[in-house]
Image 1 (cartoon, helix red, strand yellow):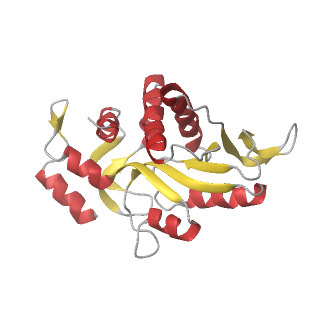
Image 2 (cartoon, rainbow, N blue to C red; image 1 turned 180 degrees about the vertical axis):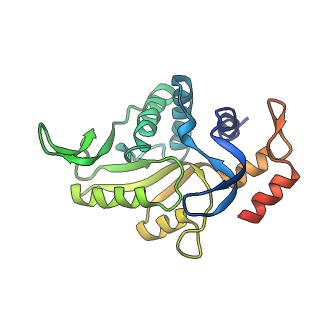
Length: 217
């Protein structure tokens, strides 16, 4: 089993990937839902970090100086990914995250953890990007901090949602900012892997659900 297939199985078992009838924040009716807020144990976050680490190691084996987690959901993801990279591959990368409100006492500033410097190559670690708002805010933040370059975005799932144009949100980010985007898995990979394949005795994507997912995409 590939790490992508293992990750899909892990999401189902964690109750993060579910199927049924849902309405997204944007108002779209969707037959599947990904709620990363359902990760809630030490074992889960440790395993999650290793899936992120595998994706980073496969796509970015070098050329990374720092991992950045946008507040708030990205914070534990960046920490878990950094830990997974060290544990599995011996790569000891620094991580940082932003404060929602700039601290006006003590050392001050908007960044916690590693302080990126000029020339640093930064990778953003996120969960599921829908509109891309947090990523765009992160890119704007780094432009105010100095001459560092955000080179890539790592996400858990590419929902392959259409953005504001005739392409997906992730493609918009690629086109608008020139950054590479690497999902651990895409929704099509989820659909293909789970189609009529039972997980712990239950088939989550039967022919009907696959048809609904295809129609949604």
